[in-house]
Image (tube, rainbow, N blue to C red):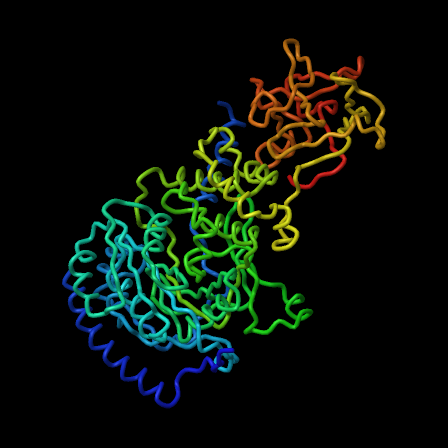
Length: 572
């Protein structure tokens, strides 16, 4: 069995070596810095506004983790008063304070933000080597160099097989010959200049294809690795090749470039429709399970930009879905794939990496940005969410209206079968049980509030009878795709004169869809109504009080015979 050593930095010969190396790096960086400084109706309109909000949710980038704070505010750099306008004008170069970034040393010292017990933890002597893969397009010079130097100066050299920089067809001249010349002094740094734009996802795959290390470590190009960041990640992968290890992602301020620590006990999660976010582990859970600051945290969804994974395992999983374009949704896809196909995703508190979180991505998409991300997420939903994909489409209903083309899914579906992956229900029950994921929005008896009677299925027709909770023919589901469903039959307008009937359900047929409760924010007076999406002008499900017959009629907010209630509601 291999030996163990403490993960300890900063004493004896190691400290002298780090100091000497830092002086050398500083001199090189000062020279580099000098070089760099030389370079249809109101309702429909309201619903359209709601769909606009859905679209904005789908493609936005991840927010920084909560609880950011500066460990050393006294050392902050400031933009001089007479340079404020220049700094403001240069913001658009990277969507952060580029002027200030250029003033800061490329190998600056940052505070060791690891929990106190990390330096005493032990790691194996025979950790696997890793290839660092860093993709970029038109990255700011000083930020890119600072990212690379933080890797080289804060990583044990014997663990770095190579650093592969993947230039995704940048347009900036300084990222061509100048970058090649600067990096030529570092034998382990290799640069792959792509001949056309690949996008982040395929650029990473290009880097992975040429990697020689046993482990792939993906990093963004605007990061700063902290003290002792690498060994804890490789230790987890060494313990099990099916473990995917993520550092704690700390915050580099886009405004003043300060390095800020974040609250411990956070994990990556998602909310519908697959919006990534961070969530704090509740204090009562921490106390009940006696979780320590150095304990590994199981992570339902990784942020996606920074992680280590066994290279062979990554390829066995099929890498990223090659059908995903540019950026967006790849973190969801790899997270579901890892968990459902036998792996684990962990956040390692003793590994800390700072990251610049920007309000907007400064890089252009070859195609429309929003449509690209929407298509990627829909592709992930179709392959991995099983019956729960209805929740995705229900929360991003504009994608149903578009009839979005997600491309050929044959290879991805076959891969999932080959890997014998578990169901998404298993993922919800075992990995992310606190996600609210009801398969329908409402279910049970469908009761008319005024008549206190229920819709009933008789063979293939509809009737209106006394309510009976034991009558299976009175049980309906209101689905995320807005169908009122009884087994394989759906309630639908039938012909002229407001008739109502049953039709075989088709998930994407607009003629079968009804709005119920979803209008509360826009037209609260119709909250309890059931409004046909197909008919114009808007028509509502109604019972004739004299004949007890079901029909659709012009919506009337004051008509109690147009107000309905399901037995159970699971979502608005």
